[in-house]
Image (cartoon, rainbow, N blue to C red; front, side, top):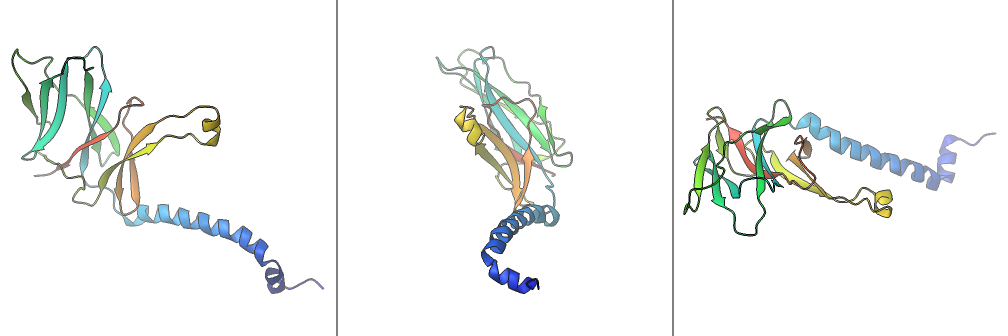
Length: 197
């Protein structure tokens, strides 16, 4: 007479636990990543992000973005001697399309002789103001995440690489920000949220 299912489970409790525990853990992780997608609403605001890259042929100026009175400003100043020029690129992440596009900025090629710096107001956002706080009014927050290992096989064969990605995070929901055509060492930096007046 074959043993009853209850007796089989009692006699093989260790085997049952060894099979069931990984399944429970996988189910927990699947639920913890999918539930926020259903319960947390999508972002409601566009985001401005900046990247910088080395550009030996670019103008010998440094550009810093800042927000004042709801307006985005670019402060342009000359580069110190023996400093390599960097190209600054401004990106707009569209919350409805869930993609990013570059915002062309007309900056100076050089400053006038004796000029320490110049501030240029960037007003290409359709009347929206820029909010410089890291967390948007809808609860989303800009975060960068670093990764430097391609796994065990990559580590064994010297395929280490360093990447830094950007994401919007709100109560467990994570939305990756993919910036087209950026280089490996360009790090996304937060600039501000675009808010309707």
